[in-house]
Amino acid sequence: MLWPLLQGRQLFEHFTHDASLIPMETLPIWQRQFRRLGEKMGNSDWYKTGLGQDEIANIRKRIEMEGALSTHAFETKTKSREMWARPPHKKALDQMWYAGELATCYRESFIKYYNLGERVFPAHLRQGPNDRDQIDMLCDQALDKITFGTNGEVQRYWEAMSARTAKGWQERRNPVPVSVQTADGGRYDAWGAPDIEQRLSDAPNPTIRLRILNPFDPAIRDRTRLQKLFGFEYRNEMFVPQAKRRWGYYVYPLLEGDRFVGRCEIKADRAAGWLRVTGFWPEPKVKWSASRLEKSEAELARFARLAGIRDVGWIVPRPV
Image (cartoon, rainbow, N blue to C red; front, side, top):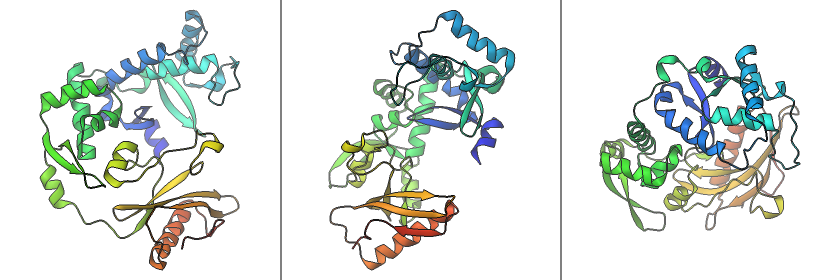
């Protein structure tokens, strides 16, 4: 569903807190992020390509002459066996991609095809307002999306500026001051969206349903905020060596109403048509009654249907 929107230019691909697909109308206020990340990656030791300027220019020239190309169109080799090692041409492509000089034109089997930014980004959206206005508009959008937050939480939403820069936004915009109660009963000062009172008034009661959340769900992406508001500690351990993991490789938080009640690891084989719970960790002091277990089974069935799977089971013992 997403890739046609990318190819049709309704979305563009770039980096916020992680690799992201962003509405194209955001492009005018993304110019500072192109500059910021382009400079950052250009100065990064990890991204040093080892290529001469002529070689880098030739990579760009090939895309200009041949059209969109993937990394497989180039032949330089990496000298490292590290998991995230990149060949020199890939580093050069990514440097230009971060700077907005190149852009993701489309993907095939998840492989990124690079084209010139001027061919991908609509001309009328490539010029943005001045830098301060871009900062203010990005922070306004972040606060609108999270409803309330500290300067740090607003800054971390896009990761498009420093915390000090975000403080300048707060001083210029003077958002609504709010006091937020934490999971342990404490409080901290934050800022609310202009219509915060109306949002609180209109907010529905939490559902009684139990939900399996993706590790990249917006509700849990800011781990510090998550722990403050819900008392739930979470980290993505895909890139943690197995011996150092507390939980597992790809672990899903379990949200029931407005409370996190546990986490589980799920593996599936779509070709064979099965899905299995391979790890389960209840939250402390959460009792897994028959009702809660029934909710979890119903959510697993919904989750399996999303993947086109019917055979659902547990390898580890069901919670009791």
